[in-house]
Image 1: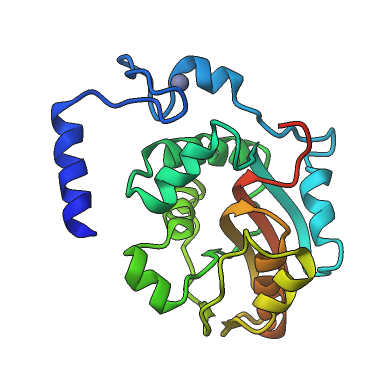
Image 2: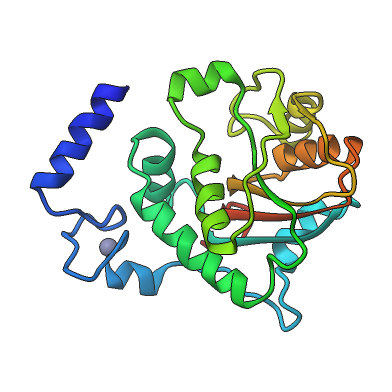
Length: 232
Ligand SMILES: [Zn+2]
């Protein structure tokens, strides 16, 4: 895993970076994605009150969640799915983190980070962390933390491994993650919870339940991509 990462880093030094969406070489000044793919990206829009109802509606059963937003709409068939694959499986988070930074700056302007005490990534169980080598949600959380000037918290743990979400129906997914997470030292804390992709919301809901059980006062959710939107 580490060798792959090293080789990729070396390759990046000697060859120009490519847009993960269309494969073209990036020009000077283009970061993460080429300009065209940036412009055509299926961004999710904020409503007039600064919210994203289509994301939030997944968490209506979660009293502790006050807001939930995502940067762009995603489906596994979409060419933009490459950004997530690079982040998650290929040790190539550049495009995802560039988008995360831009989204974080937009959220900061909108006051989304106001009142937040700590930024917490959806944790990976240690067995998965060992296999993958890093937690992709932590990478996004670190970018948000840098922009927002709010610390990353480590009070949420995955105490059991849980199966990949993609191959299960909604009810099964909720059962699958029901008692996976545990939080500590959250009394009165206002938390910003970070994930790479929201699909059914089951994983994040389980995290919110754990945060609430540990005494957290509120949760705002941020993800890079949202798989629940139609027409993408
Ligand atoms: Zn492109």
